Image (cartoon, rainbow, N blue to C red; front, side, top):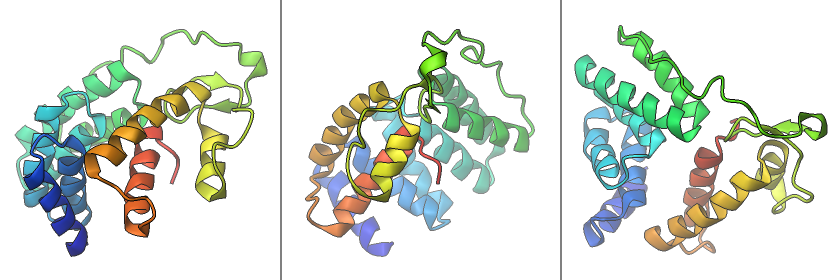
Length: 198
């Protein structure tokens, strides 16, 4: 973990506009239960990208676990609305639970009752990212257990969206995917973006 911290620190120092670097730094601190140090990088992530649902979730929880319930509630409430607007169901639902834990009431979801414009009759999965019933992609996008999980849980539209985001992850973080550590960082971002079950 400390090696990852140093890597992400160097990345954010070299490029202060690198939202992925700041998010990865904050997330690593969070995973180490170092909640006070997670707060700054996650706040910077949201300054650079105010629509990053998962960053709101982690920031709100880090603030709460650092003893600032008022800041946690404000962050989580804003994040809930952003996630609902974007259709990011897993972070939205996680933030709803955290809002309750900190004594608040989650906002009413606007997208919960939105009509689903698909042919449900031909559906054989419900996409983990967008929540729509849909047909599987014709082929697994890549080999291995993660490729199998994507094929079993993700619609073609969300997979195409990830391809663009994944390219950004590689470029912004300077990842060399031949390095297993870089591949793990890339895979973690994919799992988070596609909201794959873990």
